[in-house]
Amino acid sequence: MSITVDDVVILGWNDVPAGSRPQKIAEFLGIQAKHVLVGVDGLTAPNADPRAVSKCTCLVTDAETLARAAETMEAADLLRLTIDRAEYMFVYGFQPTARHGVILQMLSSGDIRSVAPLSEQYQFQVTDGFRSCCGQFSGLSFGATDQAIDRHFVNRAKESQHDALIRVGGKPFFVRSTVGRCQVFLSACAELADLDEPVGRRAQVLSWFSRLLPLMMCLREALGNRVWCNDRIDRLLNGRRDSST
Image (cartoon, rainbow, N blue to C red):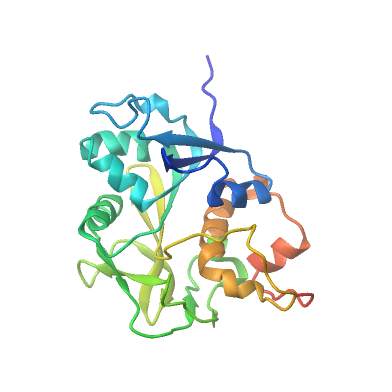
């Protein structure tokens, strides 16, 4: 009997609406996204059955969901409910708290200690070493961080084991680590873009960079040609401004 593997599973706490921001971004890219709520039906009880979360190519969730789940189960059970169910995982929304620091250390095998606020405004610096993920943004510096939502990761040691895909002020902002057989993408942005947010005609796509591009890069890396594309999305993923905005 074959096992069904979903493209994307959005994991949220039980007070998160089904039409969440990550789900809307995934569906905008033409990806089938399944929403699973934890905190209900015993999904966070000790020794919860990992099959409650279906196997998927990419699991998307936020730090607070994982922190709440971690308060009700052992770390090994939480990993079985998340890491072991996906080939790729994307996590965002980290706050500079001890609870979220525990999740960061778990998802980076102890390599990242915490997340910290930015002391000033910086440009985003995209690495030149992972073109398959970063596309033609590779090697570029541009834009400006928003101190209200953009942060940076704090490494435990100088010699880190993760890949820093995007930096701000020389510090890691969007990183990739490997936990077991899963590639884990961590974003230091506090939120994701709201695709229903009203924007002016002169709004620049790159002003949404930190809230949108890390997740899109992860989904493109995970799903490849399964990600639907049009000219505007292609320009965005390939680092070119759309002159019509």
